[in-house]
Amino acid sequence: MRKLLKVILPIFIDFGIYWAVVEYNLPSHPMKLIEIGDGNLYSLMAYFHLFWPLLLAVGILTQYLIVVPLWDNYAVKSFKARLIIGICIAAVCIAFAGSISYIIWDQADGTAPFYSFWWYLSEIQLFYWVFTFVILFLIDRRKFVKPSAPAEVAA
Figure 1: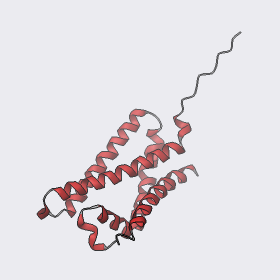
Figure 2: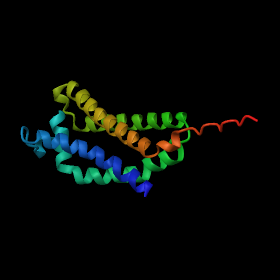
Figure 3: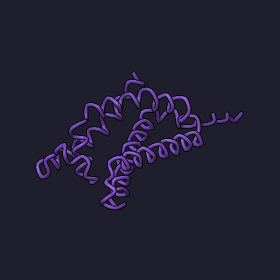
Figure 4: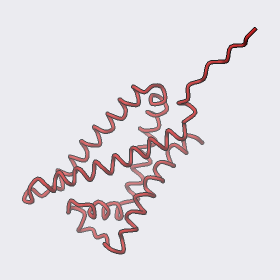
């Protein structure tokens, strides 16, 4: 039950926050498929609005196959392991954000949209992973508390 909670709860909270942001902006800015490649915040919101079922499936699979096993086997053991896992996830996310930004970047617009979109994608992933690991920490907080030494009995 705890493993199911670790897989589902972070995904639903993260996606719920993204959904609220998109739905809040929907009346003032309708989401259209043609906006996805514009390289701004509304293009990311249009992408999320249109492809959320696929993104949810990818999120659940990633959480189940990669994140929860890493968390259970390594992250609860030491600070060094948590730091290495965080750095590796950050590097992969920044690389993917840069790759996706490069793919949709129109070189005729200059480099500013490329870096802007790369920054947007990196921020969103940072938000996503920080919330995910905070939720995992709250679920497993008892594993992080060091047992106190038993009180010595005075004779």
